[in-house]
Image 1 (cartoon, rainbow, N blue to C red):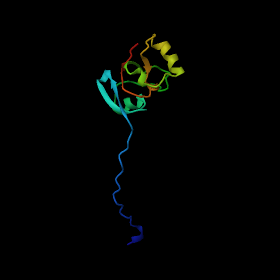
Image 2 (cartoon, helix red, strand yellow):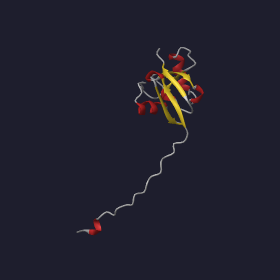
Image 3 (cartoon, rainbow, N blue to C red):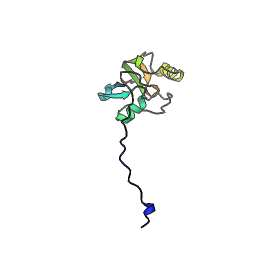
Image 4 (cartoon, one colour):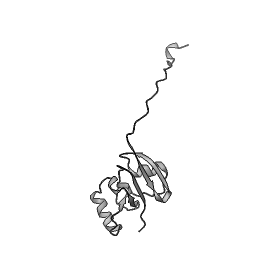
Length: 117
């Protein structure tokens, strides 16, 4: 009945695996976790996806909740922007290894921990 209404069975068309490009290692010392992520991954996304304990507030660089100390690989994070520089000048007490995780894009291997002030 209503043969015209039957859905045709589709042949299985396997989806090719997505190539996210080269992988790099991100290590969060506080949780003793190292994960492989794609170059260009945003650090807040990595923390959320992995369930890491690093807290985030505004995610715009204005609150300082996500302040980290980069132990290795500072050169493998995106450059600081003006608002991050201003916030770190106030909150990081001159620590040259301080960053706001919410402002970081990963470009290579990096190791960090929460920076308590």
